[in-house]
Length: 166
Image (cartoon, rainbow, N blue to C red):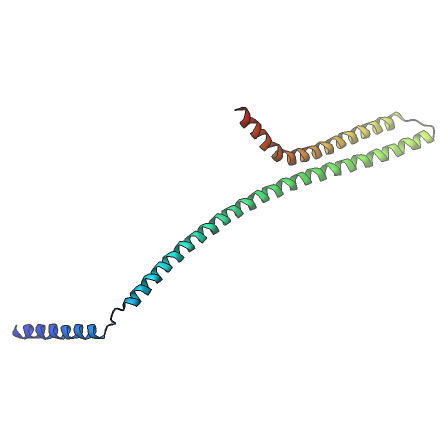
């Protein structure tokens, strides 16, 4: 047991000497270095605040950009649909007009030969009626497109009027 006590005291003495040596070797606190360290800490904190503000701005810009892209995508889809509707109306109008021209040509030939065939006149009238319907449908598509473009402009004015009435 005495060996253990003796070893403990020797280890404790050695640790004390090591601690004293470390204190002697350690850097002496320099007041200027402490002030500089404080300035660096303040500058670091300021940079962290600025960085957080920049990150918030980037996040806000990203959200705005995503919202704008979404709105533009919806607008492109709406315009694409209007274009498809318009093209379908034009195709129908061309088809009906081609039929009308063919029927009118046949009717002219029949009249030139002195043979007035009632079924050709009837067919010509039906083709003309169909052409009028196709023209009306094309006009309606065009009006719908114009109204769709005007609606966003009219809504704020209506909201202002409703707000004034309230």
